[in-house]
Image 1 (tube, rainbow, N blue to C red):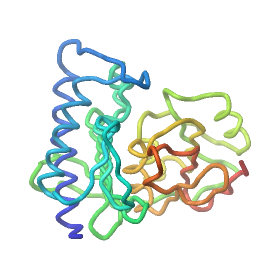
Image 2 (image 1 turned 45 degrees about the horizontal axis):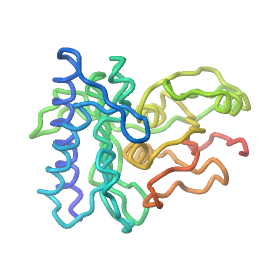
Image 3 (image 1 turned 30 degrees about the vertical axis):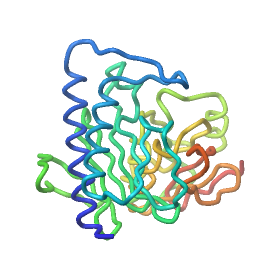
Image 4 (image 1 turned 90 degrees about the vertical axis):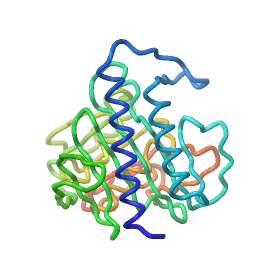
Amino acid sequence: MDFDRMMETLRRLSLEAGDKIMEIYDGEDFEVRSKSDDSPVTAADEAADAIISAGLAAAFPDVPVVTEEQADTHTVSATTFFIVDPLDGTKEFVQRRGDFTVNIAWVEDGIPIRGVVYAPARERLFWTRADGTTVEETGPFRKDAAGDLTPIGVSTPDNDALLVVASKSHRDQATDDYINRYAVADMKSAGSSLKFCLVATGEADLYPRLGRTMEWDTAAGHAVLSGAGGKVVRFDDHQALTYGKPGFENPFFIAYAPGVSLAPA
């Protein structure tokens, strides 16, 4: 696989999808419908999905693509594929809170090794370069050329004063109980896959998720964090979180900077 070409394509498609999302976000009231699992969906989800799906099919016609908005049609049994959440954090989008992202990842042998996370309302763009390392791009977000790039990396955590990030919309008592097993100096809440990115930049050391997620929710953030030196493991046995699972559903997991002394499940 030509990773230079791949990342140029993934970056461009994320920006194009982000533009469409913001056009709807900044417009008049938009319709919110419920999918079969009762999760919300909007025209922005569907428009972004169409842009990314068409772009990946044109650039990589022989590669399977898994997307949230077409999940009911997926029968992918391969361990190497693209996986997309065209609008992660739809609840944040609907409530106009800004913490939503466009996520595109490349999974190879069950591991997300390249990815893009774009938060258009926050004007934050994270992606893995062809060599697998992660950068944050700071505008002007041209489609044809990258702007200023800052290499990012995880923190060196202090286990007596950890920086923790948790879900803004899905926080529960089980998560709080687990976090309370650590010595926490600061606690942040964030939506969507931005939580992975906060660990990747060193703005947080630990992100535990004790709740239902799907592979398209996590793959791009996982790739971004891995490229910054971080890890994502299953909550139950601390083994690596893998992709291409039946139904694309994740177990509980922990994303963290190496050096964090993980509490047992």
